[in-house]
Image (tube, rainbow, N blue to C red):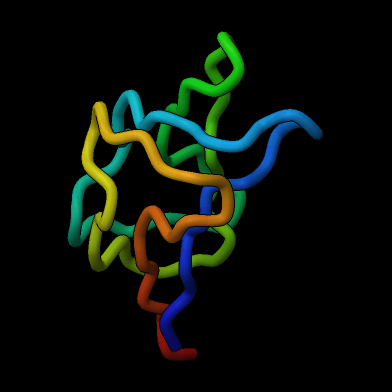
Length: 81
């Protein structure tokens, strides 16, 4: 199963965010709630955590790109149990 990692809205006034860096590369395993990216939003830096356990299969938004809230940032392929 594929899970989207979306840019969350960290505050009521937040409309967009800029990816500063990824802590994981495509193809690397991730664990649910693990920090996987750093985002600049509303003059503060926050982290995005993995919403599921699996493999970070595709990064959709590269560092220095600014996107609206709720935009898919990456895809995680779930691990078959």
